[in-house]
Length: 153
Ligand SMILES: [Zn+2]
Image (cartoon, rainbow, N blue to C red; front, side, top):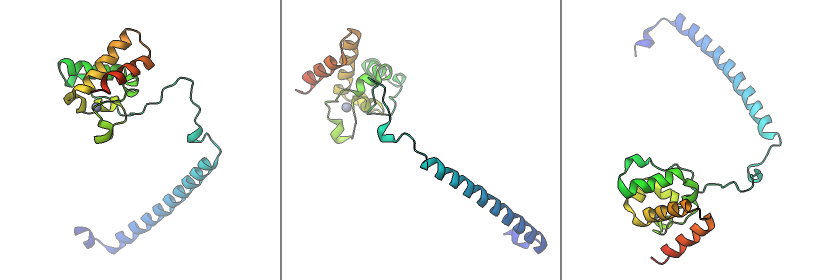
């Protein structure tokens, strides 16, 4: 509370200065606002009609997988698959049904936290997908093979 004891003159002077600053910043703010208004009013590509390059894959899971270095053995390998081919895992459904209990968007979601490290289904699906990719299998074939194998479990 030491500030209150200071001389009135100094206080008034400071207040005047502060008022000046406030006016200046108001002017700046309104100029910025006008600018933003003009910017948002200008007809631009609406988000819904964003042109998409043919074949470009739009990720369902936007978070990144954890580093494989955090794990060992088979689980490390599976996290490495997620790291190296996120788009592949993102197109696969995880049959541990984590979409229901954890709100996961795809198999890739399982690798954005420690979930996959405790789940055989997540790990095996990723390893199968990686093996099929290396064989040169198409994404549609990988998808149906995974669906066939794990939907019965
Ligand atoms: Zn899962």
